[in-house]
Image (cartoon, rainbow, N blue to C red; front, side, top):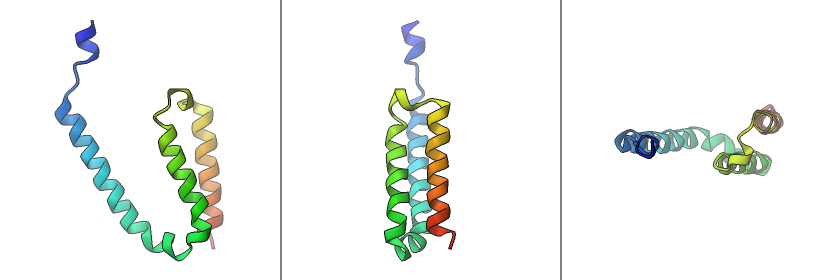
Length: 84
């Protein structure tokens, strides 16, 4: 049973991580002009996004309520920051 739980395809795991890094770089490149033009108002949005990304690795935060409230607050702040 222990061999089944640790039988990971490392090639696919590394490939997924590389793809995630590339997607993040492309997204930041596309969003940079908007974020930099309104940096003071975007600071809260950036902070919440980074905090939420870090919290995804904590097992106690992986519940439906947490996902709803973090995404809702991020969306609300994005609306105020970039909504015009």
